[in-house]
Length: 161
Image (cartoon, rainbow, N blue to C red; front, side):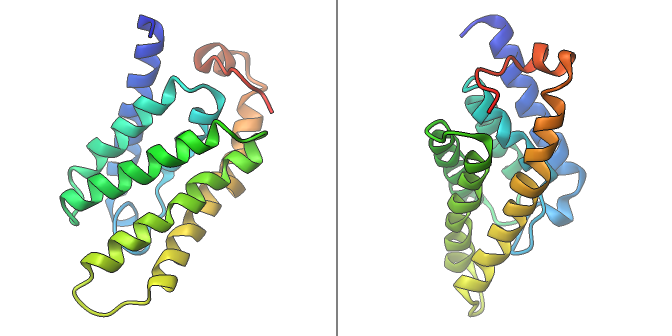
């Protein structure tokens, strides 16, 4: 990995952490709405961001009230989503991978719940928030940003679909 790519990945990690920590009430627990998840689409555009955004997830989850399990499940489900995104033919289908992989966050919350919870309700809430962030907001935002020369120069997308 070149120094510039490492710098880009590190910047993505830092931005993920800052965006997650900026609104902690919406970043952890059964009702999540992480603005930082918009950055997952960078992993589709260029795989250099996979390590950075995964590291950002790990660091952001260090302060999770759920503890170490949130680091493992959160970073693990994100990393899996990023790998699957690389196999997708376009940004729309790629944006669905974080949605599908967020079911593991539902598993995590079900495992650690102190009281009985509905696995499908909790998983559905997380998946819906991912759908809103990654697909409904994220894809149009990325498509718009890809029209900006400065953004394209900085991100260095390997694909534009």
